[in-house]
Image (tube, rainbow, N blue to C red; front, side):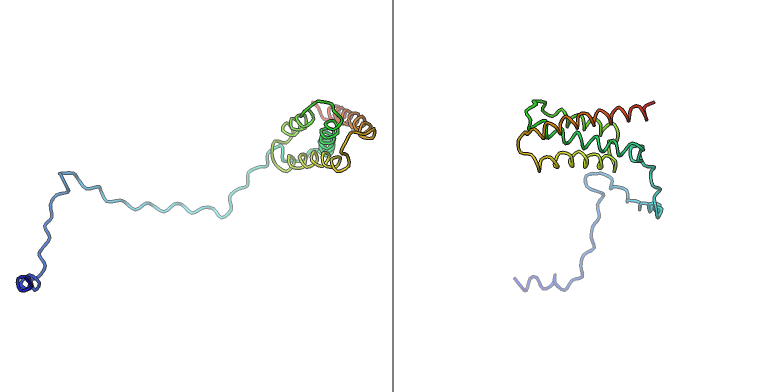
Length: 154
């Protein structure tokens, strides 16, 4: 059998036969190279900060109010007021109305957490001192709210 293959091994390769694209279909047109995207500017213009990102003259008062709400959220909970999430919800509404995002939002959230955790570290149960703190914070919070409204409301 090897002898029968020898004439084929020495022969030059046969020319390929080309037929139209299979079953009469047209080949896909050649892909054109895409143009290069325009170069990006080295520095994109910075967007203007949102109105809630700019500090306001009453920010310290708002942060104090958020801190008071955090303290009340904890103290009213251990003193059995059965108010649930009332003070947290009030703080959340205040924060979302004044600063839905950005650094002011973060500062107000930190103030709320500071008020909550400050009393969480000191009180495990309701005491007469906790009731006094609740009473004083309710008064101080109401006073801050009145002052902000009187000074800065339209």
